[in-house]
Image 1 (spheres, protein in one colour):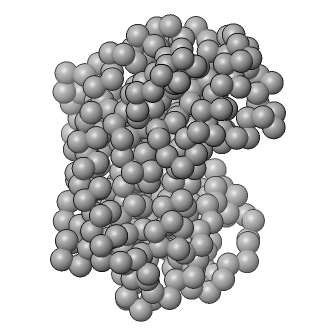
Image 2 (tube, rainbow, N blue to C red):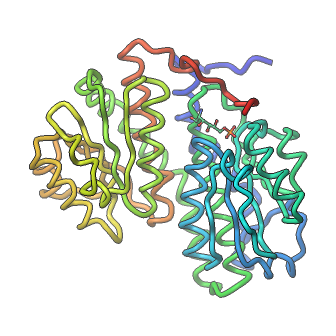
Image 3 (cartoon, rainbow, N blue to C red):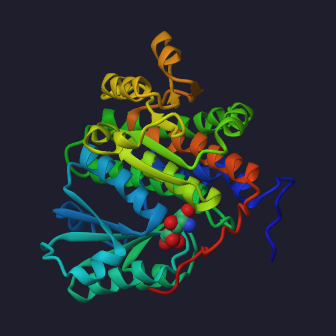
Length: 368
Ligand code: AGP
């Protein structure tokens, strides 16, 4: 039946606000304190097969491809398994050499994306194990894969993916924990990751409280024709995702880049009409991103910073500062996506766009 909007003006806004709950649902029954690991019922692989994995390929399209990029950082950091991220549309025709003991994960909200299905079928035909990270139960991709993990995010109606993205990242974090604990990760580190995951829904709830502040910022920049989104490490995919959200629903041109790549070209775009959004919660590359932000400011570009700590320097450089709660680096993409989802939402509403059904787009892309 029809899913209600629950008093929200749009499905997208409702789904953004559902994220604390959808994250809880992704984790329900999957965290095991006794062994400090994650539990998955449907991978259909023996512990021996899982321990023998030498490479993981993560594939998908659009936003699901962005969560794959987040997964690459997570799995390599916590499980120390080499990861490749592939656009499904490219993987299906490129025919890359794939080593034995490779696991291929197709990441997809709908489970119906034609390119992702074809990429999985193509790798399966060559003898590789395929798994789905999927929201829609019983979908074509869920059926085609050898096994998988459901997101349990509930129906996502808005064409712009929000809660499915955060749940994909969350499932990938749990998978990293799971693989890590089968290899070199200590009991103690596993336990710490579980604790951090348990605190995540509350952090997302807190991030949602900047809604009215973001609406104010949106009204200031809604007329811009170009945006840059910049971040590093775990927040490089966040930059891509923020830019895609803005493009999809407000039809404003936006580019996401790793912040340090800016000086190799995109900085030429900076002028007083082009806002740059810096995703810079405190972490490994914080100081470096701060100097990138200073460079943009020095060239007269308006700066919006998404930060996790009050600091005089950020306030001095940035025109706008959006504060999000502090979480460990691997969970930052989940928390920092929230203000970017809200920013694109409010800008789209102000521009009179059809938020839930943007022009030219379909919720699931079942054609090539
Ligand atoms: C996300 O906001 C987009 N509408 C789109 O990029 C989407 O993520 C992509 O089409 C993949 O869809 P899927 O997750 O259902 O496979």
